[in-house]
Amino acid sequence: MTTVTYQIPNISCHHCIHTIKSEVGEMNGVLTVDGDVDTKKVTITYDAPATAEKIEDLLAEINYPVAK
Image 1: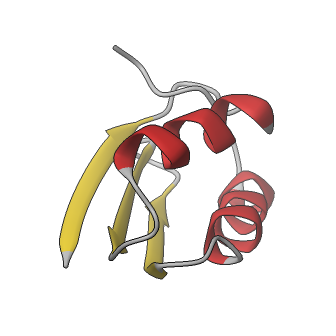
Image 2: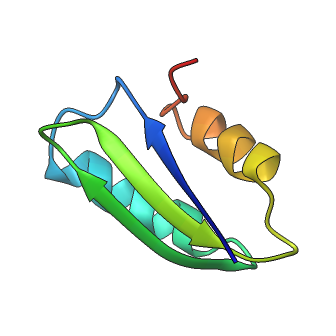
Image 3: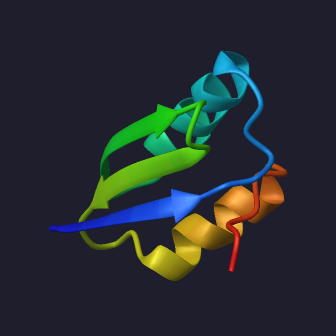
């Protein structure tokens, strides 16, 4: 099990968090998705077959790219 925390500048409201939780939460292997509007951070816990790269690609695809 791996846990990552991402800074996502496009988060502006609770709807953003809901969208991220819904989309990323559907990915096979993702166990939990938690977000905070104030810090614009999302913490994701996952196992295989999910990978950090796949999660980051999905976040970019839904218009919530990770700050690098």
